[in-house]
Image (cartoon, rainbow, N blue to C red):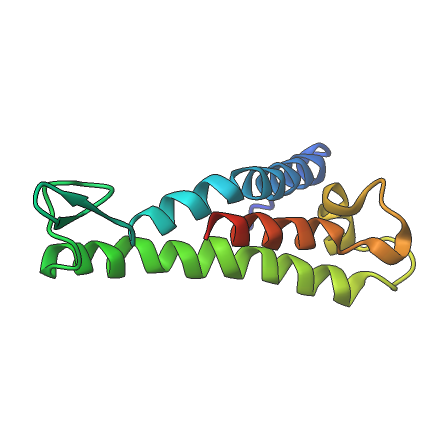
Length: 136
């Protein structure tokens, strides 16, 4: 006996809403994620010039434990969220920008360029990079 699942009619709209929400959240949280991940690399001088990690002042700056946290948490966040997520969205948008008709990637990324002139569709990415550089 073969059982076939029937796809509910609201399923495509749900998927579209989830993807658009995810893209919006990533770009809204991007400055905070950038700031938090970069703060893992910062050190502060405490009592007699002893350098401690800013995020956790019980850790010596760039000690074994601090380097472990940087490599396990800090660098992956920088690579995945700060650099790769906006870059992938930009590549998808550039690849689909001039295509006519209905396009899923263009539809999902609409929130990033809606209201902009057609030749300035990339401006949200310029702002994202500008904010990241300011936080550095």
